[in-house]
Length: 78
Image (cartoon, rainbow, N blue to C red):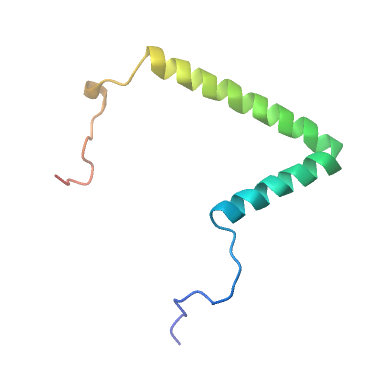
C-alpha cells in the first residue's frame, strides 16, 4: 500500500499566524496559572537577552571577514 501523500481536507493545522497565537495563548495561560513557571520564563528571557546582546556586540566589534569564510559555495553552484 502506498502512503497517502495528500493532507486530509478539513483538518485544522497550527501554521503561520494561528500557531503563533496558540503558542502565545499557551504561554499566557501558564504564566497566569503556574507561579513557578513565571520564574522559569523570566530567567529564560533574561538569559536569552544576555546571549543576544553578547552576540550582537561580538559581531559588531569583530565582524566576520571574507577571508575567514572557507567554503563560500559548498554545493559548487555558480
